[in-house]
Image 1 (cartoon, rainbow, N blue to C red):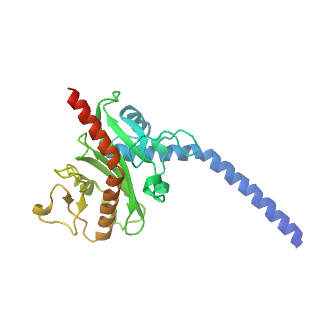
Image 2: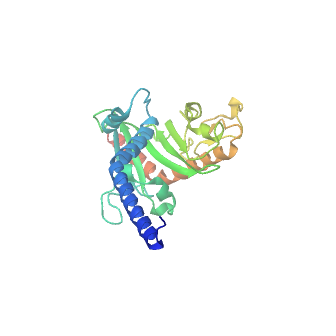
Length: 255
């Protein structure tokens, strides 16, 4: 039996409302799980810059994070920031680096994660800084860990959205990440130099000094994107690094 146009319209509207409501309820029900998944992924990447998580899963990673990471947020000058524009408390883990990237550097919030011995916040072993930039096909991001000298790379953790498999995507590989270990951010005079991937791969050891590592074959533009990302963010965090160095030197003079 053929239905009237009014019936069809009303039936479609009711069906749309019902299905929309069910989808909304499903989304609300899954939201806590989604938030925990995002939290786990973020904390896993932060820890991956300083320690091997092989064999650890889920709650083990979250427990390790709680035992070994203390976080703060600073501004471009390196001063602590405790409240956002609305007066709410700021949590470093909840700062959206991608959204911050769209703002002018002086308007951004910069999370800092201090890695310390389990249960002893004063025994800091490394400082971890989030970084964000542009690769060949889309955004790239990660975490860079510095030793307590605030100069030597302890470890890295990189990720990307759409770099070419087997080429630019290799920035996530242990092989490429390990090339940064032990490299220096500042030169002997204290000038910020950063660390750069060279063009091409299998370069002569003579050019792989404290500030240069081997590049990525077939992925020069991705490598340059990583270089720009690191150079930019070391500059953004330089205010905090300098203040921390000065504070450490003053304490050392007292003894």
